[in-house]
Length: 259
Image (cartoon, rainbow, N blue to C red; front, side, top):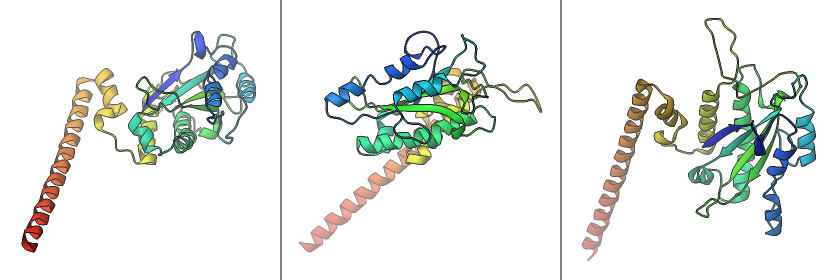
């Protein structure tokens, strides 16, 4: 599961002004789908499946009380499941799209809200999602979602930045910022629980993060965890092969007796 938090600089995700350009960019696939006679996936939020783009722009742009001109006004989360993960979300594109909406609402945005450690839930976040069905370089499906998220909560009173580092100075200290590590881990775990997807240790965020940024001890722990899992899988495959061979032999014996 590839999850990115984007925003800043120029281009499609420039976020110190209006979100109109970003909203327009996220509709780039709609015309092609219409021309091909395919259904468009409109913007959605916590409670609505069909949110007009003008409402997205108005609601995000007007939810910026006490923000300075050069402050970020919104962020964009991109959620891109792998081919295996897409299969776990359903058989048809329609099933996968609905599963993605449910996942964004119930898991991604809930974990996002919890990441600030301020007692927030997904209903407290002003956000609008858009599902895309682009094809990848190999011609396969590339279902993914983009979520535009306001810098302020739905009450327009709390500033929420996922680009502020999570900190806890000491015992009894007030936590601040956004815990990105727990967010990524939580999203991945929620997806696996929701879909029943069996994830290899080496495919987990925890393993890959340890390999890139972990201490030698953390790296070793993850390697050992992966080895243990691989041994279990190898034993299960061997047991299946042995059972298959036994059944084959029994069948051949029965055939010989019948002759």
